[in-house]
Image (tube, rainbow, N blue to C red; front, side, top):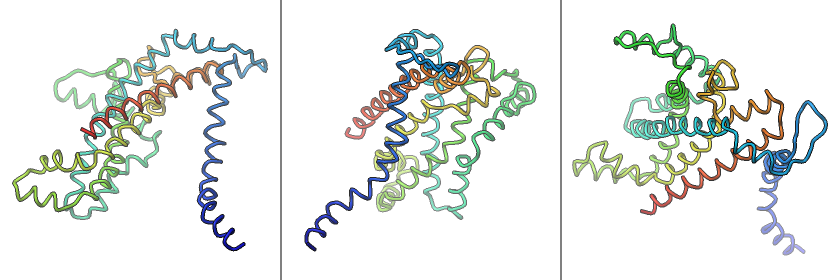
Length: 298
């Protein structure tokens, strides 16, 4: 009997430890996902109790909706403008923080402060910085003899402003992830490189980057997923407008979904947009993983 209990404990205990996670994941992950898929097949309005089954009609309408494709294009552009500089700056910042600095804890805490700041506060402050009449950026441009820019009016200018918010907020966070990976790289490699006359930048590109490549792949994938779901920055930058500007010039996929659900109250169509967004994120993340994995193997 004791041997039986011992075998059950050894073989069964690990499963019992992970059961709570899978129960929560099923309740708050799988079930909402499946229910959203069911809703997407219906004409589901909050203003009516009748839910007519439509099949794939919502999907056909979505893929013919130019506003959806505009939102997807804006999302991709903001992702490129924000993610690429953000990860490069995070890598350089982590390299600097990995040096022998005085009060290293202070500098590391300072790097992560933007990430723990309220996103609403960040968006409001940056909306003022990029203000047309009294913004700091336009004041600097005028001081340099350049003209003012209406940052919210143009497609490129508004997306640059939103990308700057995202870069400021997430660079320090990714830098700490890189720093943690750099701490595991043997110091002997750097000492040997220093003896051979390698500069700090050469050590970064020849030693650090190859050594932490799995971590870089992780941050690229996570940043891709986050970049495809950006919502708060464009929403608050536009003063709470769900259309993303007068000409939808910075409306993202999340903002488009938010508009359909809570402006039109069309939850069926919004669920369709959510599933399309989910599929796009999976495809983009898979492509990123494939490309970065090939790079790592090479």
